[in-house]
Image: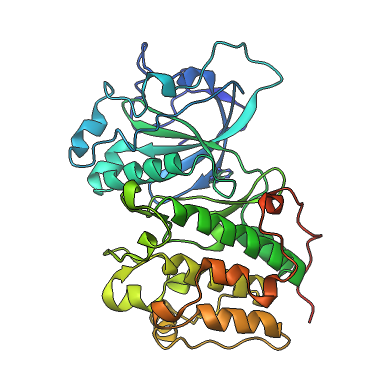
Length: 359
Ligand code: ADE
């Protein structure tokens, strides 16, 4: 993808110089409504590009997915748009000052098929569709495709991610940690209530929106439980997987037995909360092998001055045996959250001033 300084229009500029772009003249999605700008992120098989476009009602199909993962080759067909007719960006309104910014995740289909990752794109869309009304999740506004790429039009979160924030300050104050720990926990609760397990929660996957609210992103490795069964109990169902998330944040059972349930998100949550105060995740070691050994032994040490109530909470979540871990509702009732309001108000309050942890 060409990083461009000014804005360019996809129909005028080749965004994938190695492959001829094929925006169909009658392509279902109104890709032309978007004006593309700079690259704001890169993943293993995708690039995220800032774009502006109409702020009109954007709808995305509520069908779980129309990317047939079993027939991955159909991804190459531009006749099968990702979204239904209703799913496109509406361009009826003229471009105006009310245009919004979007983060458009562009996934190269050839790469997806070559790497047998088509099902991850389908999963990501299905998860984001289920989570459209969840305040702690980056919103999916529309999806479409052309011959080369899949496009996910996402809410743009302009304030970077939690890792960048943490790096700027070294660590975060107790008040800021408590604020983001609560928002993240609430988001995880919402995910689990609709049968979505994220499986790769880490600071890089927590974006900050225009109001500095936490927004979970990157659902490409999520597990989806059948929606008819989705409730908090069903999230305790094991999902067998060959997937292992990020070394520092994976629970022991995923390493040992290759399966995990919803508690894997709470394990990762505890690791992130530890990291916000300590400046480093609990099981981090010189290399991945040593990190895994620490995880398997649940071996970690707190830096001096770590708050004792948070120690108590994290100790109850970072238990080797998943069934012994505190669950989401119990965590919200812990002393550490004694002054936290877990109602909708959680999303209305701005974060406390940013600064490092001082014991
Ligand atoms: N990087 C990846 N996704 C993003 C988003 N939705 N907003 C801003 N930056 C991003």
